Length: 115
Length: 118
Image 1 (cartoon, each protein chain N blue to C red):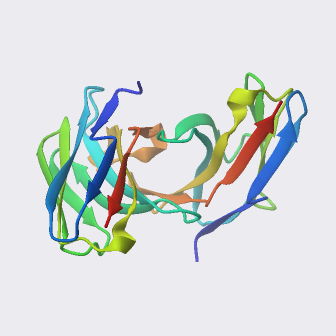
Image 2 (image 1 turned 90 degrees about the vertical axis):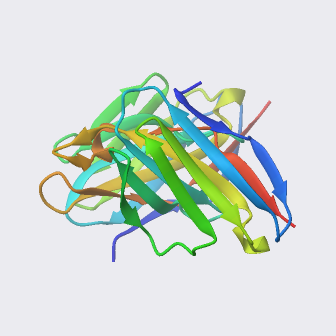
Image 3 (image 1 turned 45 degrees about the horizontal axis):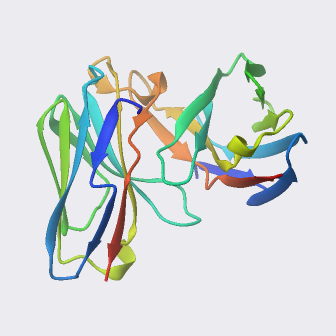
């Protein structure tokens, strides 16, 4: 069964600290993996996308890693800011052949950055 | 703003009411989607439209009725809802590749409509 699991479910850190969010997936055939940030009351916004051959991708203070062998991804946030408080969702794309793709969503990690 | 606009942002309705959610995008995308987001659950795909034709209905109850008059507009008509239908309803759009909706190029989500059924 195609599944995406994220941990921890929620996380509280102090402003300025670093943190790492985890994503494990059992999805096949894998196409790509995205991390989304969803602010409260907003829709998700894409942070990074990685294909099978990529194992790290950065977007400012956000760095995503991908280990396609172990089917694990992480999102590392450096020097956290109050505005990083949000839900972070891992989304894996399944390619069923040709142009047909499906998205499998994780439940998200809720991050709270405190002053 | 992301380029996908949803209205209203908040909606409270009784179980006997009829209401509609609206989604509009001017990104040049041809695929549009409705998702339901409930607390502590993954986003659930409800409907997919490609070039204004419905290509996917994910076993959604008939009390939810989508309408796509053109590639830029998508509606979700609601009637006789249940309290468990209370959720954040998200609209998204994406490119179409190879004739199929292609979320591989990335979704653009709207801000959602927070629906409460009382």
